Length: 399
Ligand SMILES: Cc1ncc(COP(=O)(O)O)c(C=O)c1O
Image (cartoon, rainbow, N blue to C red; front, top):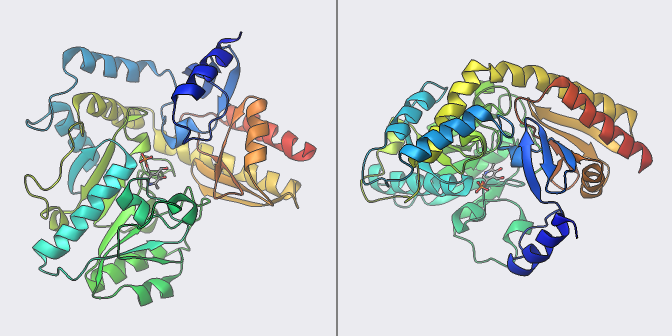
């Protein structure tokens, strides 16, 4: 029996059935290529859901992790951690100056942001009535109760109610709706600068600046969830940099440690004061292992010029997808994205196309139901992009 079959039989017996998994067990990888346990090759345009930004099987990253693991892998936040401090120093050089809290996932980073905003309004500003969160239709912020409560997609929330209260959803990209929604009951507004899971939805130019202006004017905290768009995914370190503005709080995860589980919440000096010793914590958060990996990622991004690479190869992908969309109308409705977060919008469900691609050795994912998402490692080459787009094209011709 092939090893895949053996492992799937045991996996299906023992693992909770909460994922719609493809029947593949990966063994190892190199760059943008993965091999399964039976030796099949896959060209990876998913990077583990926008995570493995340096690619797979990266020797330098592996060495940084193993060197740290051999020396010290966990001590807890009862003490200061050298790798955490050095990572904070590296992140502080990017486009958001402030203080940081480290955790283990995107959902946790958003939980921290929501809690910090509530405490800031209640304790620092003395406005305990400001409890309402404003979020967006089609948003995605994670699966924990708080993050789920500000996620604007019913399919993720169904069966889990009641949600954490006082959340209002408004349409993304509509400045008038935001103007009408932010009141003296608003605690914070939480937004993805580009909605990723919801279908790679880009806001109109100037919209993020308008959110900033409204939140400042009305005393609401502005939280940007850059869990998927951050760490260079869209060609700038943060996606919000496109609009020359900064939020009060920004959350990160996914690419942060190149695939080692890690999240972060960064807050400006005004808002971060709301957390004092004992107000929030994580046993594993910012442990030496994850921080060493993240520090390596920061250095590699600069050494390999990954932001420039992402812009260039992302532009190549963007125009290849837009030509593909034109060629295959009416099966497609266009393409959209920025940097190496791009989507081909289909006239129908994306899942069957993604499945066919997988059967041909190309890994893609679905966003927002009808969008085929490309979020490859930031080290992807133009040749690899061309190979992926050609496979996708052939599938569209046949389907
Ligand atoms: C924008 C955004 N926020 C939060 C999350 C949740 O991150 P995690 O799965 O690490 O909890 C995701 C995951 O896809 C995301 O895309």
